Image (cartoon, rainbow, N blue to C red; front, side, top):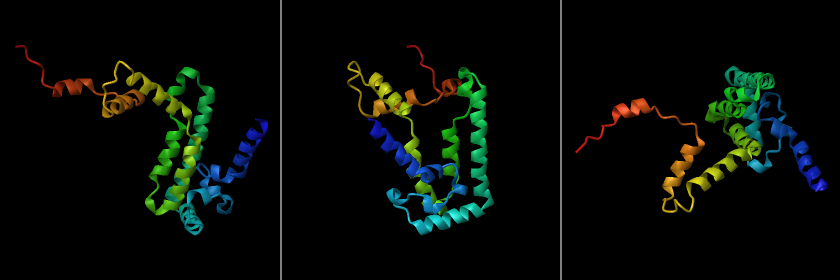
Length: 176
């Protein structure tokens, strides 16, 4: 088991530049990135990265991302556990920055979207399975596949409908 851990962590050391690319792309050496698993053209990636680094708008966005992440980490250290929910999630900031890039940086985005899932938490997956087990139990076995999907979306998202607005739009049921 010890050898297994050592081998696994050695892979992280080997791919350090590739993994750091997500939040530190402005200082990344493209020759140190392992692009083979992602099917990316090395020449196009280098050209797009050079272009991205010279564009003030996009390079500024990633500089801002890095400083915002540092601020959030400081805030996390200073808050109590109960106040952590009020602090924005770092994942949302990272995805927001990458989603804002235009398609002319397709190779850069392809690499980012290939690396980002590596850091995904199993918490969301476990939560979804737990919710699905609650929704699709033996008692509710007559549900079609569309119904559990809708129930799972409602259970795992933070959607809060405007009940007052909805009740004004709905016609009230008249007595017979």
